[in-house]
Length: 270
Image: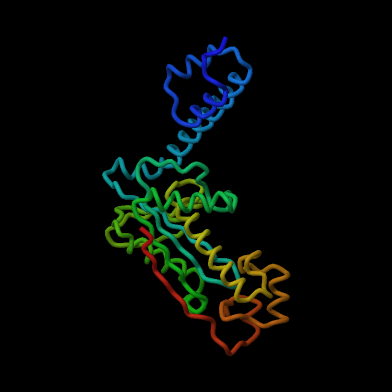
């Protein structure tokens, strides 16, 4: 028995937020096409409910801080510690207490296409976001560990909204007036750190793609500056670019006179 509505009309209504009475009416519809639409709708609703539960659990660490009266909790992570070339990009993100960021996870576990979507959604929903970009010369001067530590401190202390607490991905920090928890695999255990990892990764990937257009022979868009066989061969064949880190091997052993580029930025994105 039908309901007087075409299958196409029901399909369009199911794309929005149908009323419970409408759903109940359609469930009485005997048409195979309507039953198939409702099966698909129910699967999507179940998946969304499961994802909401996962995201709620993903904020358990932040929730522990909120329960202690620390309403603003930042997550901080970086991208680009290991590559031979390109900047170190670090991000700090404060998320609201309720989020809808389907697919949010450690950036390494998320596809490039999904990261791009999440980047926009994080910027839209976040309370505050900062990004630090440290060029190779600063990395060479400080060493990569100290560069990451410096960048994380800069990001956390320059958020437009001052956090009472912060979670980092395995980086111990001491910041006056801020409780900092360094968490191994933090980007898989804290929503705020995962959001920071997405912002840092997408920002750095875009910079490496720009670099690839400037230096196409190195393949930066593909390997993002990591020491692949192709990349190392390009260094041997063409020499290093100003974006190569002189303190990293094999460049360190080349006794290079030309310095790496010094280009540092601190961006308040929100």
